[in-house]
Image (cartoon, rainbow, N blue to C red; front, top):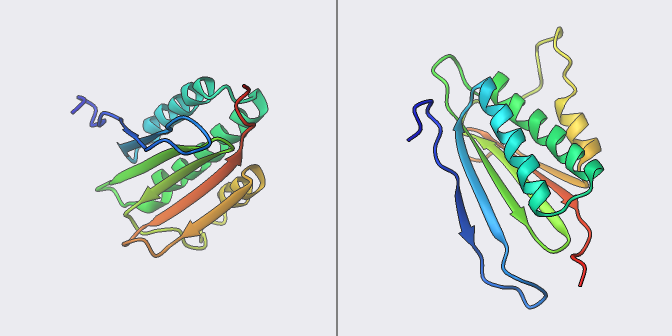
Length: 152
């Protein structure tokens, strides 16, 4: 365990698909704290570089994931805290990112002073979004982004 409560990311190999090489899923579990939103954003940037995503696609992904993680940090837990879990699932034509928590879950905001634009923004940036409020006691936001097929 890292001294700041970070856990080491793990990569899991999937079996090769008939249409291409094996893909790696990345799973992160981090304390739901503001500084860890920046960690996730950095990981997304590095992952986008590895996948050779366009600057625009990578910017959209980073912003959407930042919004989802910020939602967890701001709304999922009380002062005792909890974790946010991020899964990155690449395929030949898509990148799926899941941000989940086991806290209160997503509910209509009663905070009339905050921007309240996180989920609509994610919906605008991603090609598809699924929000599941029934996973255990928390929430799960699954975002999917199209990516060009690998050349060759």
